[in-house]
Image 1 (cartoon, rainbow over the protein chains, first blue to last red):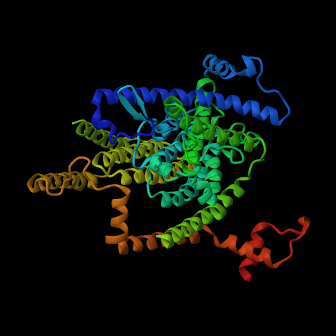
Image 2 (image 1 turned 180 degrees about the vertical axis):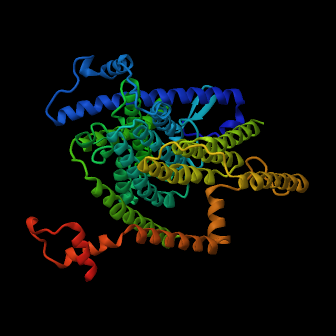
Image 3 (image 1 turned 90 degrees about the vertical axis):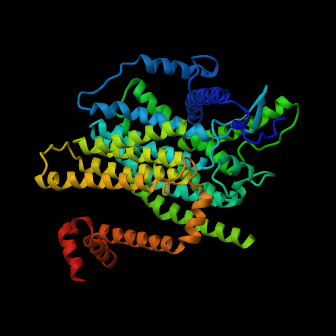
Length: 350
Length: 196
């Protein structure tokens, strides 16, 4: 029974079994995440091409489906240039920092319910922490160092400006992003992502209860991931390529993958916090019952990934002062007002 | 056992980061060492059971405040600093002072036994516990602190908005926009603003 819940997974199994299951889960999640990242790039190219009345990648494999693989091989074999004027330790560390934090943040994201595999059972999640949401926010807030240090260590004016813009922008929008989630937390009464999803049963999705918070979250998340219309850190018409101007080959690819991995995390969070996570109609034989929640989760995440691409190829870029004014003068007061109203309603009902 | 090993491991990282912070001559390396110190402190809190404090430590200190440090260092374009021999006063007073402090702390911990310490993972650190403490027992200090922070924010706003900028805005709102060829140079515009 996939709905059945074991009381505490660690109690019933030995430490070895626990370690093995954790390692398998981690490897599986990282594998799926990296594949998702590769195919988000493919999706981006396809959708952008369609929006611009082009074909996009078609040559490698059917519908260009093997294009990500070809791109990966290309990145590995390209010459890795290291300019003589860079500050080497940080120049090398920066893409790693960006990538590590982008991948780590997926570790507390739940994908589905409890499943039983033979004698063992596990949650479809690497680990369930009772401060899960804060962990994701903390790890993503550390990710800004990758971008900032890349900009500084490159010793290049464009890079430095990109890095400065990125850090200022991410710190500013993190405030409204965090505050927009407080309304959801007040309703759910927990910081565990699993409990937040469980509180949304019977179509009590937070998108209906917290529409303002959802839009604040969405906009701030776009700014946090440096995507258009907030892609000023790498605005190619002003800054060449911003913070990754001096990077080539696999180091550049790591920034690229970190950006898309962050997008996946943000899409997962939006699904979990506002769209009921893996909740959806579940029916049929046990195997189908185990697979369907994951399918709903993936579909919802896919919707947000598509939205990302759609927005990018539809909206023009902000000006930097507009970006800052919008974050501090519009989103922040709105988020605070949303908290006050939500708290009042919850207190009145109690 | 595993907890203890991890605790000692992160404690060692924390001390190493703190020493590196002092030894490094480039400000950005020092800032990064400080981030390491804060992150390993967060890991220590987590191991003690104070999950919420650990998360806040990472989000606020490592994720926000240190970003501002790094931005400042990047903006000022601060270069590597020179090592100096250090003043004689620091050596004469500082080293014995630090030694006395360390001895005092060690002596207190050893003689008092385990009264002030907490078992690994036993700290009441869940968000609910913290909320109960903050909003019931320590409500007044909490609110006073928030007023203090508000005052600091207002002070920052006042300091950041330079009087010339306010004066210029003042004149622009009162006079019709001059044509480009009639536009006065900026310093005079500021001067006329001060006469109002």
